[in-house]
Amino acid sequence: MKNVLAVVAALFITVGAYAQIENPVKWAYAAKRTSSTEATIFLKADIQPGWHIYSLNVKDGGPIKTSFTFEKSKDYVLVGKPLEPKPLSKFEKSFGIQVTYFEKEVVFQQKIRLKSANVPAIKGSLEYETCNNIKCLPPDDVNFTIPLGK
Image 1 (tube, rainbow, N blue to C red):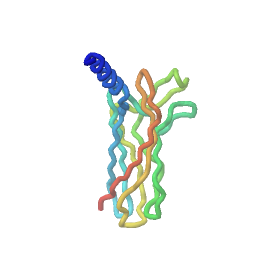
Image 2 (tube, helix red, strand yellow):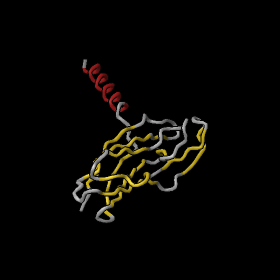
Image 3 (tube, rainbow, N blue to C red):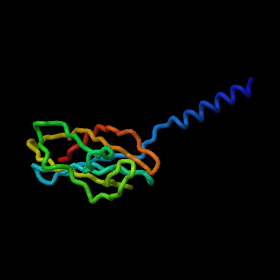
Image 4 (cartoon, rainbow, N blue to C red):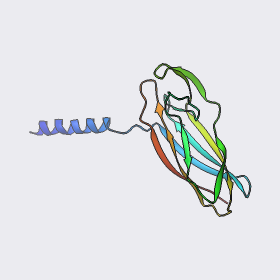
């Protein structure tokens, strides 16, 4: 009887280990006021070795590109589009197109114009897909709140 219980316990532990959610990307956020009426938002992805996320500019028919949505507010407006550093590029057979992507880490930036001096934070969400040489994980949506210091 003890042996049966030990085997059942071992199975539960093994299944639990396989059921853990993979999360190879960690996000961090910051904001820097560049003047009394402007700020820059920074969204940084730390990517585990062997994994990558896609650029903001991926062609249709390819993987899910990284994208940001900022909550509409009467206190600020976006200035231009989000910026990214120069991505890596390769042909991916699974999509049949050239794709642009980032490994290790990437910092995206978004400039905003402040309509009020008392904006406490910028809220929004981001969507991205992460892949390695074997598989892609389902796209992930992440909500964020970025304090806007004085």
